[in-house]
Amino acid sequence: MWTGYKILIFSCLTTEIWMEKQYLSQRDVDLQAYFTRNHTVLQGTRFKRAIFQGQYCRNFGCCEDRDDGCVTEFYAANALCYCDKFCDRENSDCCPDYKSFCREEKEWPPHTQPWYPEGCLKDGQHYEEGSVIKENCNSCTCSGQQWKCSQHVCLVRPELIEQVNKGDYGWTAQNYSQFWGMTLEDGFKFHLGTLPPSPMLLSMNEMTASLPATTDLPEFFVASYKWPGWTHGPLDQKNCAASWAFSTASVAADRIAIQSKGRYTANLSPQNLISCCAKNRHGCNSGSIDRAWWYLRKRGLVSHACYPLSKDQNATNNGCAMASRSDGRGKRHATKPCPNNVEKSNRIYQCSPPYRVSSNETEIMKEIMQNGPVQAIMQVREDFFHYKTGIYRHVTSTNKESEKYRKLQTHAVKLTGWGTLRGAQGQKEKFWVAANSWGKSWGENGYFRILRGVNESDIEKLIIAAWGQLTSSDEP
Ligand SMILES: *[C@@H]1O[C@H](CO)[C@@H](O)[C@H](O)[C@H]1NC(C)=O
Ligand SMILES: *[C@@H]1O[C@H](CO)[C@@H](O)[C@H](O)[C@H]1NC(C)=O
Ligand SMILES: *[C@@H]1O[C@H](CO)[C@@H](O)[C@H](O)[C@H]1NC(C)=O
Ligand SMILES: *[C@@H]1O[C@H](CO)[C@@H](O)[C@H](O)[C@H]1NC(C)=O
Ligand SMILES: *[C@@H]1O[C@H](CO)[C@@H](O)[C@H](O)[C@H]1NC(C)=O
Image 1 (cartoon, rainbow, N blue to C red):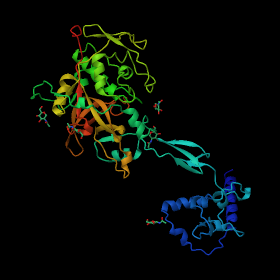
Image 2 (cartoon, rainbow, N blue to C red):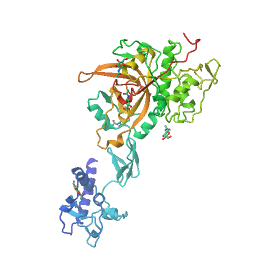
Image 3 (tube, rainbow, N blue to C red):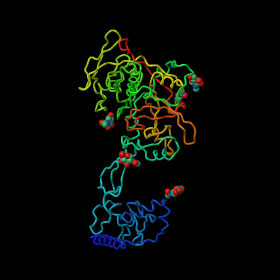
Image 4 (spheres, rainbow, N blue to C red):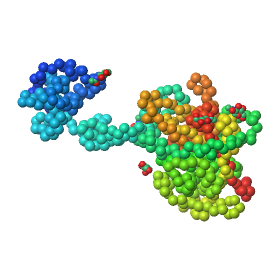
């Protein structure tokens, strides 16, 4: 069987060589003509392989009139053949594929068919002409025996992952399957979702925590150690650009639990914000945190268990399934049952107006230790999506063409603690511990660490917090 197969291939080749001998050169041409065209070594190798597959003019190109430089070599027959119009004479010295390729005469007599398979190859697999395959975020179509691919910049870039992991940046990168196949554009469009802070927010006065200036701050602090069960882990915003809602609901929930000393420990519903914060019409298309905090103060949110995330988060016109009204004594009550039939409690949780915490590192630490996690606005760049573990700092791609690979957009996260680590060179590295909203499979169980005290990615630029609004009957 195997020998039979080899004989078949051999006879095909010999037929081809025999056939090609009929195209011996009849022109006196300087072989250098071919080499005056610029070809790299790789192109040369590819060229030889193409010729072996019967692609001469297809690879070399077709020429008008008489062009003695439009010549290529039969390696098999040790002769020359041409792809110019002049070759097609009585005593033809055209390459075997001149007619089919340069004159697009598809009808060749069967015995002169060039010997090569139709379609394209990919990873050793053969694809029919017209096949479409996906390569990360680009789709490639097999056309004219070549893959023609769209040229999007992808969110996951293997060369960037390699650059980060080979370098000494203090963090490692990973290829996340949930981001694979997305364009850079869509990644930024669907996984962030906080509008740049308004001038009003930026002009808010900074508050300082009331801890005495001499308070000793520990080397390491995380809110969940100080208040176990009262703080809330990261959720997954999926393809919903609503970090404005996820970060606000999470900070509010932690603070209400801490302030009520564990009486109200429910996580709050980001979906309630996304679907009901009507003035923030964007929903899953970004929103502002001032509107989110306004809503928490004026309308309040039910728990995450009561109003869970919609299955189809993309549907931004998901109607609002919750409403509340005031009891006249400053407290609001839900007027609808929970939009799921498991949770019975539709209690409404409200917050005070938000306040801005100083950008001073020490002040932020005091605030977290005394009152609980805070919201931080940060600038996300393309490398951040790949973060797996370590202390994040932005790594600029070394790619020459890097402009089109660069992107920067506002995101909102929750700072829950800090720490210090000895770096590779023995230096002290200070970091924040922050909760993202990309699920628990991202980063360090949904959290990330980021350089502290150097305004990395603007993480210290705008820190926001609020108090829970608890009436006297709510107090423990
Ligand atoms: C060949 O390459 C050189 C430099 O590498 C360039 O100056 C020249 O224009 C090229 N010639 C052709 C025909 O492309
Ligand atoms: C990255 O992950 C995707 C999906 O899990 C996989 O198909 C792809 O081959 C991976 N790419 C690299 C370069 O590891
Ligand atoms: C979400 O909507 C965008 C356009 O608004 C679309 O490109 C995307 O494919 C949708 N995603 C899903 C999961 O339906
Ligand atoms: C931050 O505040 C502390 C006091 O809380 C002060 O000692 C320190 O100098 C401040 N740092 C900066 C950079 O202003
Ligand atoms: C952080 O960096 C941003 C951008 O460079 C700047 O606007 C802001 O003032 C900085 N904030 C602090 C506290 O250094």
